[in-house]
Length: 91
Image (cartoon, rainbow, N blue to C red; front, side):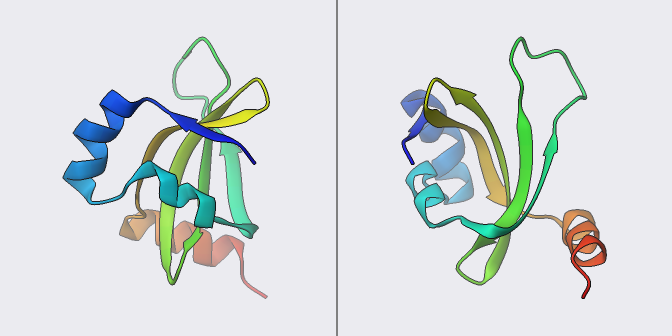
């Protein structure tokens, strides 16, 4: 999967959060909770994905630009998101 992102945003957000966007390559899509982000009209479809990178749950905001997955934001999931993930993915 081709992954793209804005290098200027990576400088601002990636360094602040200690998460380089290229680690999205390690995002575990097999058990991901994905929902379309309908909070605003962004001019493009955006998605929220809760999934694991290594042993930590992360929130990935992304869109598709052509064949590429374009990273808008990446951060560690907060407590509320972890709880939602756990409730949704119960056996």
